[in-house]
Image (cartoon, rainbow, N blue to C red; front, side):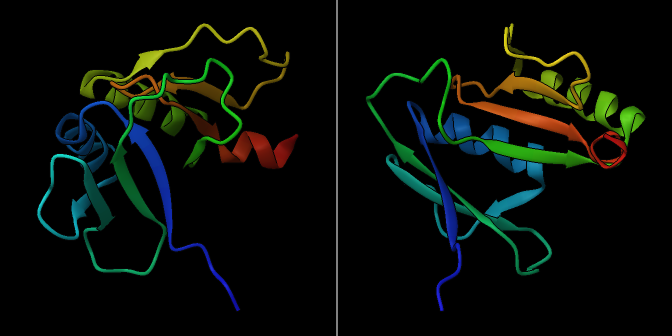
Amino acid sequence: MLGIGSVVLGVSDVGRAAAFWTKALGYVPRDEIEDDWVVLVPTDGAAGPRLSLGLSETPVQEHPRVHLDLYAGGAADQAAEVERLLALGARCVDWELYPEDADFVVLADPDGNRFCVVDTKGAAEG
């Protein structure tokens, strides 16, 4: 049986991306950070999704087909996490596809990769 071992993001600067995502997720590099590759794992050693960052020369997609959803516990937690991520170097994305009752906020990491911070309590209510 197969399982997802790692989600891979293409980035233009592996070191910069690793610095952002380790702080954003509380992950650590599994091995030494290379110029073109690193695998990040949960700090506490718990099983969970790995995030692999690979050097890429392709442009970031404005409407990516695949992205990360980061779960927050509720609206207040979501707002606090968005502010924390912005302070780490993320930026807000002017997302024209928001539904009226959106339970998510679209951000971009320092490389421009889009991801969402989801209010899971709002999602459960919807």
